[in-house]
Amino acid sequence: MSARLARPTVNTPFHISLDWWQRTRQDFMSHLREAACGDCQKRYPLDGALSQIDFIDPHTAEVRRLNSLWQCVIETCSQHPDYYSPELPLATALFRALVARANSPLTPSEMQTIIGRSNAQTILRVLTGPNAILGIVPVE
Amino acid sequence: MVRKWPNYSISTHLTTNSYPQLLPRRLTPPIIKGEIIFNDREANFAVPYTVDSPEYWQSFTVSGRDVDRVEDRLLEAGVPQAITDLAELIIRGRLDDSAAERPANDAEIRLYQPKYSYEVGQHLRFSALNNALGVVVGTRSGENPTVGQFDVMRVRMDRGGEREFAVNYTADHPLNADAASSGTTNALTYVNHVARVLAQRLAQSADYVAFGDLWFRRDLLPDVNISHLIIAEAVIDVAGEAQSTNALLKDVELPGTDSAIRAFALNVALAQDAERRFVNVGTPAAPRWALREGVAV
Image 1 (tube, rainbow over the protein chains, first blue to last red):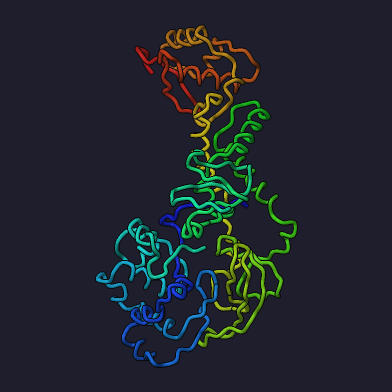
Image 2: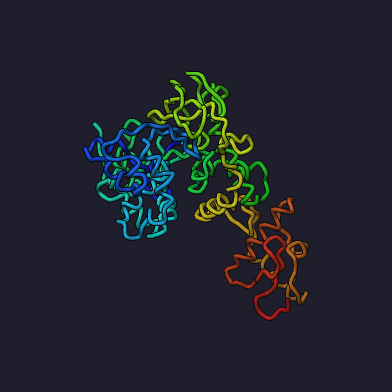
């Protein structure tokens, strides 16, 4: 098989790199908690312990270890109409889209459909700037 | 020494000389030990396309090997060929090449479906991941009270890294459906796209000539000279109406025994007449030739 190296396009899948968060010593959990709605934040307070569950990707059957707060965001918060509030910064909305999908890779085109604003080219430009934003990088 | 190149648009193949680089050399960094290294972010952008993926065919470009196949077909058949037939020839050729590159133990690579379980050491193909390959390196029990009983296998992927997948997972999941589990795209559904790209490539060479969707080598055609065109013009003029190619060939005597080649040669000559005397008032598949001036069609 021959491999092709190509500049990312609107059809290139992106995901949140947890390695990036570790490498840059930024707090992924605080950003996750910001994406959580009031119900989930109350259910899983800051000082409470979180359990780990195996989340099965509905498309690839890949298993991702998520904590119970993340699962709550997927099952509860992401269903709220203001989860993708138009007042959110675009990068935050993209981060929330990936969180809601348990970090299943999404293309800029798919992200645009999910968040319901901007356009795929602008999203691509945001994600391929000189520095990764919120750990969102192309899938290797 | 590894050299790093600035971030710019490029597309190239890494591993084989069968499919040459696609961009002018000035835009192409050298291949060092089979690798092309971009800056750190660019290096993450490797997207392996295989013949099973839509992206492979959507980004199809004609290679030297493809042209060789076209040449061989034109010479073997000895008559003009439809561009879609040539495109299908190329697609099948690439599928054969890809199959030949697969490891000898390809039959031992199983298709991954979550409803089954797999032993450590089993090689798997992941249809939902663009047919990525991997080998099972471990298993454990799954933990998700809302889903029910299942296990998790850890897989070392051929493209690098390890990932986990559900196994013994009998719940409703698209990958558990046998009819849709192949995950491979039907390459032949892209025949029209490949045909368009191929036609553009052949049109860039004076060696090939087309009429309608038929293509042939120019040097295999009988010569149609000015005398032949004058005769054709006269036949149409006398008839007072458009004439089919076969009708014209009764009077326009071209060398050769194959009627398909003679018809194709005459069609090309009439269509490309420098004085633009002729117009096809029929279809490319069933041309009818009229004079551009003064003859009722």
